[in-house]
Length: 119
Image (tube, rainbow, N blue to C red; front, side):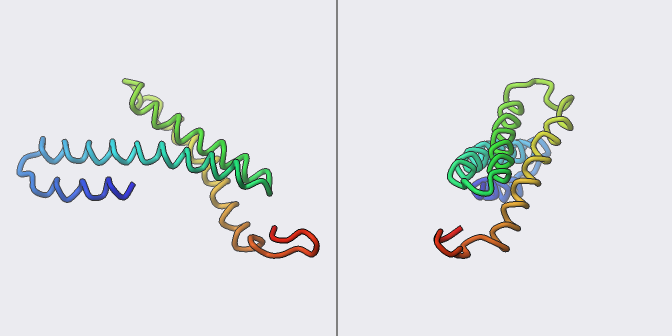
């Protein structure tokens, strides 16, 4: 997604609205592709996480929703009519899964339990 940020300074070189808007659209497209790959990342993270299971489930759902939302952006001509629904489908599992993972890693991640090694 950092690649998308490098597309924005090119918009400053434009002198008309159409040129600026074209560069903003390029940024948006690159950002959406990055979100698709972030969804793949979340799916793989959910697969290797193992415990706690509920966090892995929310991460997997969030990853799938990121991918579905990105595909919908490109495939639905009337995406804006459904944007709020897609936002909720992405936001709820990603907030629950990503925040729960962050808290779990801060509180319990990497601590050793007697007889079981790292948790």
